Every structure is written in structure tokens, then in C-alpha cells.
Amino acid sequence: MKSLAELAKIREEALKKVDVRKDRKGTRIVVGMATCGISAGARPVLTALLEEVQKRNLGDVEVTQTGCIGVCRLEPIVEVYMPGEEKVTYVEMTEEKARKVIAEHIVNGNVVTEYTIGAAE
Image (cartoon, rainbow, N blue to C red; front, top):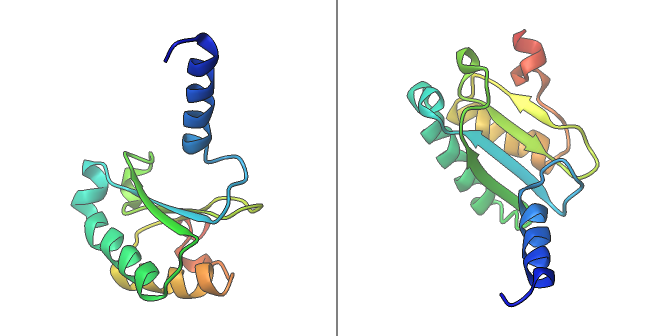
């Protein structure tokens, strides 16, 4: 890096990668993997999501991890970000629920409302 312009370009590219609120290409699935999520069973949920995405060859779907999402009593929590749509938050997830979310929401476009935070509240 030899100039402020180069630094500004690096900063802009990094911000694009971490900004989940702007429209992005493809779908992003985020699993809460703080200690609260892990102790509630987030690791098998993450594994099930990764396996389903790979099995179905969903190249435009990215599965990532984050820390605490903030509602520990409803862990494991999975958030789905699809381009041009509102974020969907799934709570009290299991491996079976994760597989159904991939099949129904990600593949067929139908939110599994009974698993969402709105249904739990």
C-alpha cells in the first residue's frame, strides 16, 4: 500500500464483504455460534445446513457463522438473507428443521413460518 487511495479501495472492498444489509448476489445463511448457541446445539445445525447446501449443489448459497445474535433463550438461531427480501430469523433450530428450511425456504422460496422468531414470540 503506497497511497491513501489504495487504502480507501481496500476499505471499500472490505466493507462490501461484511455489509449484509445491502442487496448481495445469492443467499446468505448465518448461524449463531457463540457459547449460548453451541451449547444449545448450533454445531449440528450448521453441519446440516452445510451438508444440504452441498448435496443440493446450491452454489449461490453461502453458510457462515457469527457470534451471539442476542436472543440466547431461543438458540440455536439461524438468519437467512436473500437478495431483495427481509431477513428471516429461525429459532430453536434442529438438524431436521435446518434441512426443511433449505428445502422449503431456500429452494422453493417459502418461509417456514412455524420456525421463525415471530411464531416463537
